Image (tube, rainbow, N blue to C red; front, side):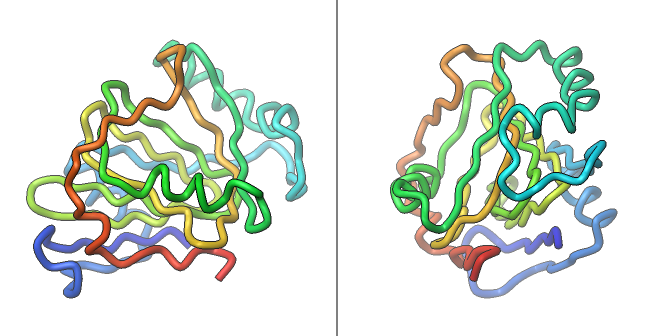
Length: 184
């Protein structure tokens, strides 16, 4: 279930808001310029569905988004608890960073949390299957896939080199609640 917990960026212990109401989550994120929407697959997908099968199931939605933004590449990234690089992958995204390009992720399966820092607040957004989140360029954030990651996501890139993070050097991510993960 998609959830949003909002904190003051100086107080990671006291939530200002917690909700699982998707309309309320959309409204809160829209207020800081972060679109969130839901997509539906054209067919039921098996947990071990190949990248090609996943992209085929969302072909129309991917094509519409590609027409809007002109992506240079679209891929499918999956992570499971027994993946040999799960720990290394988690650490890569845990530090606060920005991108010079926007970051768009569609969660086909599983879950992960984007922590978005804006206007003195941290928006802890748990994205689950069906969620498409768009982080505008220069949005300060970090991502936690949990200690036992379990998700499959379509990633969209307008830059040929794909994911490029520019780390802020702020240790804020270490002060906020870590994501326990969908497989917990």
